[in-house]
Amino acid sequence: MLEREKDINDLKNKIEELQKLALEKKTDFGEEISILEAKLEKMKADLIRNLSPMDKLALSRLVERPTTLDYIEKIFDGFIELHGDRNFADDPSIVGGIARLGDLPVTVIGQQKGRDIKENVKRNFGMPKPEGFRKALRLMKQAEKFQRPVICFVDTPGADPGAGAEERGQGEAIARNLMDMINLRVPVISIVIGEGGSGGALALSVADEIWMLEHSVYAILSPEGFASILWKDAKRAQEAAQKMKITAQDLLALGLIDKIIPESPGGAHHDPDKMAASIRDCLLQVPFKSMITQGEELTGRRYEKYRQIGSYLESDNNIQ
Image (cartoon, rainbow, N blue to C red):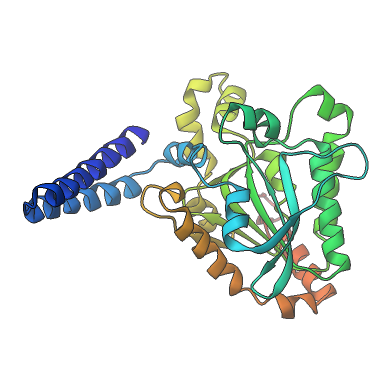
């Protein structure tokens, strides 16, 4: 997939060079440019149409892909970041705070990856520790107190698996988020913007609606991990990705998510402003103000939503 994307970028550069040359030489290259532009559009369409689950996983992991902070800056006004879990430390792999969506105060929380090695080390490659999940839950409880909707951006390969995280209660922190989020008396929207992996993603995904960007993924673990566990062979990750149903399209068909937000041809990183505008438009259509007044009805619907996932048929003779 990345090789095909490189071909597209090379063709775009060639078109730009011809356009620049036409201005400098005052020569008409209109016909040549039109042919190349038609070829470019066909390549883009073919790229999107032929993406495999592993291609989408590669797209979701691109360092150029917009991060939580990129979207916060472009979608919301007056963002104020809040820090710390009031227990152990501040976890930079989860960012959160208060902002405005139009004229509506909201709480925004999301996993944050880095752009380079230095920032990725600081952000722990987007893998939250227990204090990150506790910070997120603290901000959700604060949102509930002040009747603010909660908007979560999910972008993580998974929770931090280190010994320190386990010693400080990683499993308990994730489980508490799942338990308490189901009972939040304010609306919650979770948006998978990149890689939604394992419990790290689940801890921000108990929501009234889960949305995914077109080329994001959402899974119990990485295809590499799946293949290593099931077949003892990480090289079968491509096969694992097919079987796991990790794409937005598969998950929508299974009823596990509620909406797919289209991306620009080639991925969200090709036009971050347009992608942010699309997410903002979707958020502005959510009736947050009326949902805030629904209280127990809101939490009841959320509970039933998750009770319906993984439905089965049972009879006296067999279980399917």
